[in-house]
Image (tube, rainbow, N blue to C red; front, side):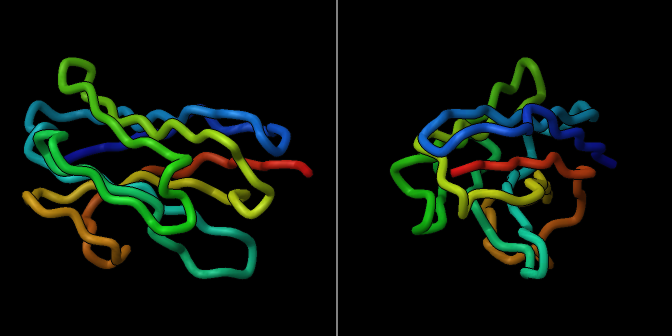
Length: 124
């Protein structure tokens, strides 16, 4: 069982940076792949980024590649999403999700555990 808690959201201006954190409980979190998803009002939840259990491989949606960086700190049981050059289109509720697997996926249905989400609002 894994519990996830996101933090770091808020209101920022276009062009600003923001870092989200996903803190996990559970001693085996290092065995889990972790993904970040976001959901804007009236839209489906979409994949943003993911990282393998080791942290050695990362994946990004084309819309955020080059601007966002995912990383994980095993000692702190935390996964981060560094977001730079934010745009109004990045606005939404950001969720982290985890699954006990080597290969992350980009589909929300692939993940077993979810956090409660953190709101990110980017003003123009």
